[in-house]
Image 1 (cartoon, rainbow, N blue to C red):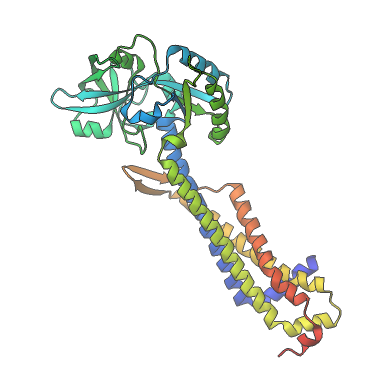
Image 2: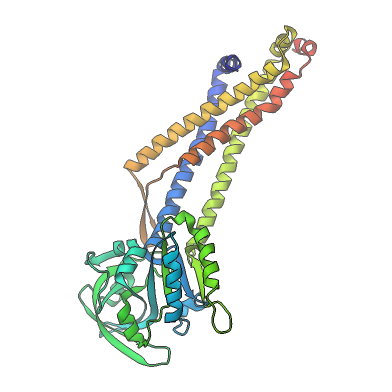
Length: 414
């Protein structure tokens, strides 16, 4: 085997320019694929983390039917204390769950005493919210970022609202809300901080203490509209979702229908569609790499066989076995794939090292995204194996043709 590979290497070096161009073409394809995988993967991770770690959590639990009319923030589709207690027991027993936060969601009128506008609010337990969406604190662009997220009597408002209403940290504002039976209630609040906007549902919501939310809605019981759940490992999203869905479906009302429903962040955020598009583009780029390697190696090997027909005939005439000739040409394809793949991987890692020092930054909507592209070992291994396999497969037909040549006809070839 070693001797055949040495012979294959010598044959490739006889046509250095062609060999170099083919290896460069393979390397370019590998670099293009790996850099796309790294940047696309980094973009997906940044956006997913921005959505799950600062707003949604990985999973959310609501009353059955709540999400169908979530834009209206319905007050009659809340989880009652009995159901919340049972859901608590389920979540505490699941070892995949890192934390969860109960929320009271409502719409209210926001007034700075001269102008009025509408605002969506999340009533939160600041400790549980900090554990479930730890990046919410990072969104505070103006105001105190230490201590509790909010205390009773305080409010975090979105940046767009602060600019539109000309409200700043420390100002007094009024919130007026209507509860489920039509009663109106208002309370004074102090603006504790201003939140940067984030793409997706909830990216422009305000935050108050959960006790204040219940007071505004004049709730007699500690009802909950939403429970956000954070997983220890986001990769376990689907298994955890399926497991929790089965357990929640066992919680039924008097009619025997499920009380609660569970949603993943993917079903709640429109960014999930962008993730699907990125995955589709990644698939197309992978196919393009395979096509580049296949066409390049196949072309080189067909030319090699055509130019060396008399040489192949001489080898056959002196007793060289067909399998040896077959192995010689397959070895050339293997070496081309290896050389191009390793060169491409090396260049890609060099480029990624530079991007770690000088990260990519660009505007995405109202946000500034910073990417630190990285590659996993599985990505590198996939590219290496794919390049080698495709190179060998591309060499198979020309190699088979060479090994089956009639030595007499080959020697008479001009």
